[in-house]
Length: 170
Image (cartoon, rainbow, N blue to C red):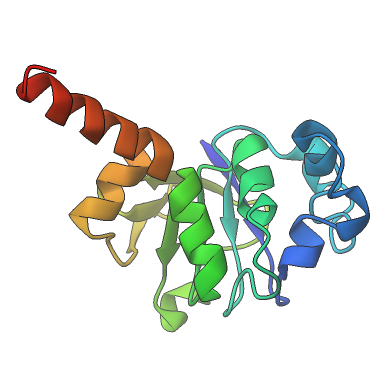
């Protein structure tokens, strides 16, 4: 089971990766993730937990560290009704799953902060064990799923390059 971290306010990149810690090593930057709105987040989040954001999740600057700290902390996926474009792309490029959820499902009574859930990347769904409810998310296109499964853009390209080079006998 994973914990759901629900955020009803707009979460911007400055809250995810505070500017005054940007020159710090990733592990230290991650310890300040979301401290302005949820000081306990970085200390209590566990690998496999899921973040549910409000519309326009990740609005703000283009800093890729905003997605990188979430991945570093073990977030299995970020779900929101909509994402700021640059945050969405940075997350995919870093191998952090991001899924959109229908606005009506976003307000499902089972999606409360701290709820125990099961996230399924393959089926793009969230199961709420307390009610045996399955909420479907908007599935990712196959090429983005492959990129995430490979760990992000760079590992994906390296894999494709090595596969192509091996097939050509190089």
